Length: 433
Image (cartoon, rainbow, N blue to C red; front, side, top):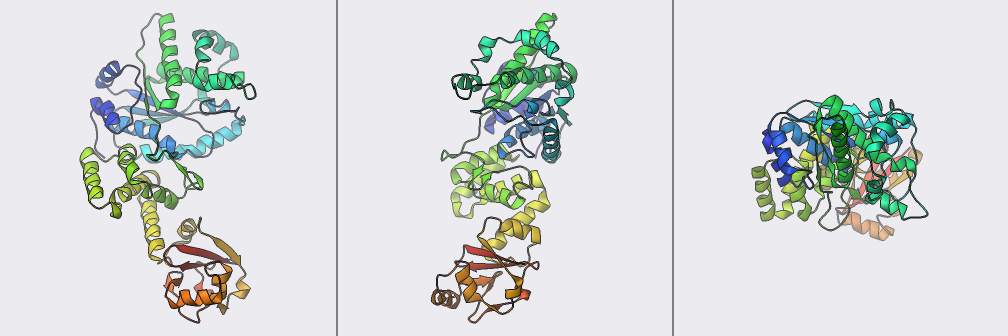
């Protein structure tokens, strides 16, 4: 990935479809051109991982770093105790401080993995629990609350929709979230020299509230303040489906919740209509490299060269090259059927969504493959099973089965697993214990 000049930052975001709202484009461009600036984005610790949608602000910070600006990750150890009402139709369940702390610690490696690979200025990771939990209620009301108009706050979409819902409503706790997030910007401006905040377009109201609080606080003290906010559009799929959702749920950014193999497959399986945009948003490839990939893809879309490159880069960025190569190799093995050499962990990941069944090892030696095909649903009858085997369409652990094939403990992969395949795609995993 190449470095950028400080003045290239906003144009870079723009051509990558990572720029939507800007508080003052001209003033921000000037501000960015006169030195290395500190730019932050906040992340909500609602779980032990982040979802793929959170990659967007992380990539914005990564491009800031490439342009010589200092990226600041703000983890919501304090605001996470309250919960952002944005996008929520009902009150959140409050988490304990211990739970929030566990979530913050579990998410931190995500930022180190991605931002640590990007050349450029230093980055830092802060936790707003360090200052928010030290505030007194009186301090907040006197020094912060006096700058907020309730009239303005109730016009915020996330608040307005809940106020109009008599059954759900909104608590004073969640109503106050905007004040705490705005205070974060004020604290970072005064104590850390942060002058800009970025995030998804759904956060623009909160970002503006923070910049406005800084302006009002500075005016009250007789000084001027230059702070800015900018957002990226929320990522959508060309077919209207929700980005980052699969049949099995959300795509997560830690291997314990979405394996490197599943993560690689998510990118590999993206549509032709989406891959051009995803290459811009989720990789650091330059215009020429992306243009060449687009031309290659247009000439031979069946080869899926663009998707493969996207999957390689995105998986390496998050999980490292070694995990990417294993994930790529596992996909090729599954396609070819040559699975015997896969490490146990990778084998488990590859077959995590394949139909499976449990069996007793005591019944394994000499068991009839035909009976097992019927038991697993790969054949409906003995006659059909024999026809499949005779046609060469049945394999055991990737090896084509012949008439009269029986099973033995020597067939077990890693001492526990035998994978059956009928045709090119119909797999069934048998586990023996």
